[in-house]
Image (cartoon, rainbow, N blue to C red):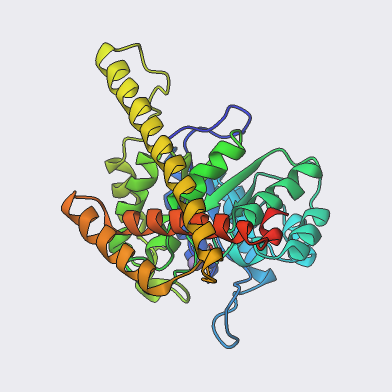
Length: 359
Ligand code: PEP
Ligand code: MN
């Protein structure tokens, strides 16, 4: 894990603290524990909690800012809070807090992002930008761009997972590929992982954090509470400071050199991979030209591109064959869906449809 030299804290960037500020005592206990470990750069705590439905714990609001300001002063640890409106930003600034995060719901709303960005002051930051609720990379990038356009250079993305299509192992599906594509498209933006909101339960948090390390993300954004079972929000997923430190101890946090010395065996293996990738692309191009021939046949016989029975039997066959080859079933399904969608797009284009897809 590593973070660019542009940022004023050490690398990797570790942010930790309770889901919500609940009491003066809770904040001071937490701040003292976290400030005692030099690996931690920021104390996080929610002051205004976005609730999907009304009636839950909506955060303490402004009084909590005083506890956080005190923690910042007393223990010298920088504090960041979630802001969703210009009023939140101004209240935090008045308390001397200048680092913020945009939550998943805020990142999903360009009007809210724009309003928050306009309330920031030039020296504020870093600003952490959680991914939006749905795996829409452009929405995530859009929020980052809105900040940068206004001159805020210390922007850090946080992968907190995406609303799952169906209940699964995690509370939020990580979609590591979305974070990796963000890295390709905005190579200078550090990306942290929030394993707490991905996992949803504390037993799984270290495993998700380890995955983030394997994907070379730039740090962690973790929920830590002095007494997680008594937490007023997200009790299941918060770690005690001791469990959190144990998790960090188990992670090889020092940066791995990203430029490897030339090594014959690796060069040979990479040449093999390159050649296999070329063959895959050649075969896909051949497949798509066959798809066009089928498209012409379908038009001549007045058939629509999508044929449900054919698609189901094809998918069934490929999933079974993929399993025999030892491939991950979700991977095979995603691949089949991707290829099939592209085939339908091509056949739709032949019929003069799908023009909107080209916009
Ligand atoms: C949080 O970090 O406590 C939070 C509400 O996060 P998210 O916006 O990722 O749901
Ligand atoms: Mn939370």
